[in-house]
Length: 503
Image (cartoon, rainbow, N blue to C red; front, top):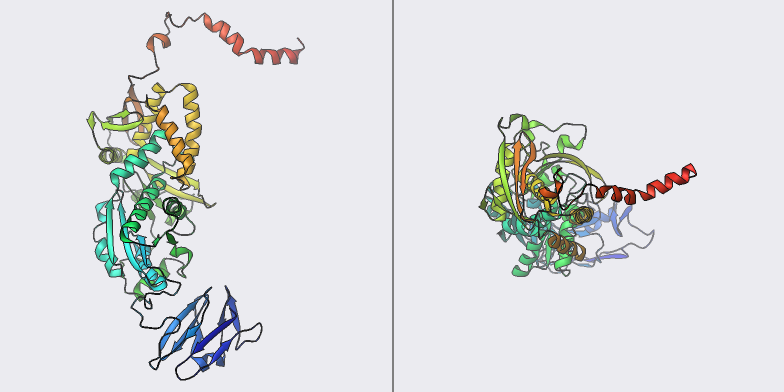
């Protein structure tokens, strides 16, 4: 910063920093000069801030934080001593006449869960961007307990309103089932529970932003995780004009302790404990667990950590059979009863959870480069995934299945990386839809103490022919024909052996 100028009502001190000509000892962070101990502060009533990159200027018992990367020219005018930078009164959240410490936005739609992080983000947005905050909560099947009381919490934190949308059917129909049809699995185990949920939430946020006239959207994802990418790529794809605010990449809060202190300072009613707990994400497809003892891959998960599934050792001693009906690669019924996508999945979660189905413990490669350890519970999803693959064993030929499996890896990678709305994924989805047209039928599965095994498969489009596959001779397949086939198929092997032997 070349120059910082302040003009007071009773005096007109001029403060300049040019090269090495300084008053006191300056420290430079992002082009902002923060003065340490000197007479300079006593002369103009300014002091260096404990936070990196700002200067706090006092005038008549009022103060303003001047942040990094701002062109600063403070005019302290008027006999009543107005604030520096922004003249006028400040509200309880620190915004000055609609302007914030970091800039100005009109209205921001915040992805809101009611937890500690998103609760403190509300006043932080108001304080730093002088904006109205509209909280948005997507119901993707996380449970009633996580939604009850959210409006009260949001408004108590300073939000103007809370909007809740039920996205369960859309989530399962338009996101989960296409991934299921594609056979998408990330790194051999992960059935993409969180990855699929983020684009449907972000899409709804873009819609809400349009409805309420917001010029920005915000989320509480950390700078170390995958979710920040998934949210923001969706924002870019659906409305590139929206501004995006990611507080975890901007604020001075470094962890849970800081967030609790910030909540107390701003009178945000967040019932939290300082004790370390698991980081969980729940929706209709799965429940993920991270953090705490799981951060060490050598630690076995505790038995009481699981919430959707019983311990397989404690599951019923008698197996249970379920029949899954599938039409063109999409599940449509359970035990002969047609159900909506969300209802079908919810029923299977109950059944699968009772038998300890769908527990996965894995170390995965995050998109941002680091490895992380997570434990997932996907009871209904594991049942459906098994049923879909078993039915394909009847309806897909060898070459098609191999190509589909190869593309499924790329499909899963795109979804994991937040590229749901990429043309490539959409094109691949069209391929998956086309080759799954004949994947219609039913699969009966046996559930027993954490395991899922196939009991029967049926399809009117089956490529399996008993009259061909039988060990008995038939008219279509003559076993004597195999001799000529083997000679031709094995010709390259035979020629190489002849060369090596000098024949």
